[in-house]
Length: 275
Image (cartoon, rainbow, N blue to C red):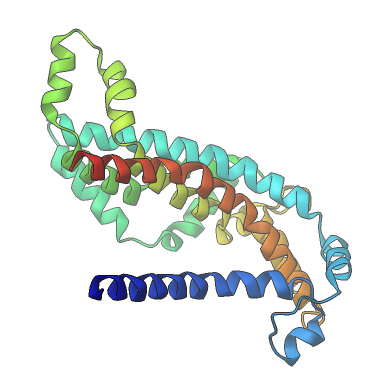
């Protein structure tokens, strides 16, 4: 009986925590249907009737779907390249003994502590000399070098991948690239999925660098386009439109999370069964 009471309390607390976490999303969806005056007057759980008005306001300032497509063109390649090459780098640092291994790893740790904004001016000057302004290349290629992702994956590989497994594959005649794709990648898939989700969110929400490098309206990513709405003179009356654009902008993030979270859940389930 006492166990059931404790279990009931635990479930109640978990449900309460879930509702608390979902509250901001619910308010965002509701405010997307309200006018700016209604939002200023206070919050409510009753949807408004200004959804079409907010929709028209958003498209008066920019093409929302064009912004989403531009963000997809940047976020998807940057995330895929970051996940692949970070895993490859982490595997090399974890299992290959070469001169300078510790130096390279130390440099990665050092770069993790340096804010990216410090190199922003020099990076812009470099892109200007290479004629890469208003191009997506400076937004995609540098995203491959992700020190935090490499560090996390290296530690995960060392803790979850037995070195004897790779050595056995070498004895059987497997090439290094074959071992990486067929043995290493499936084992570290949960960690790659986790960092892939984080990388996609970071690239999707990136604002400062696209704002500086992209000057053409038709090439602006979604966060930059949304900033034009926030910076308008009618921000008080456009609050509903802002909530609507934000609500639509998180849909791709939710889709990516749903698509990749299954790898994380399957890994947890496999570990529980094994134990």
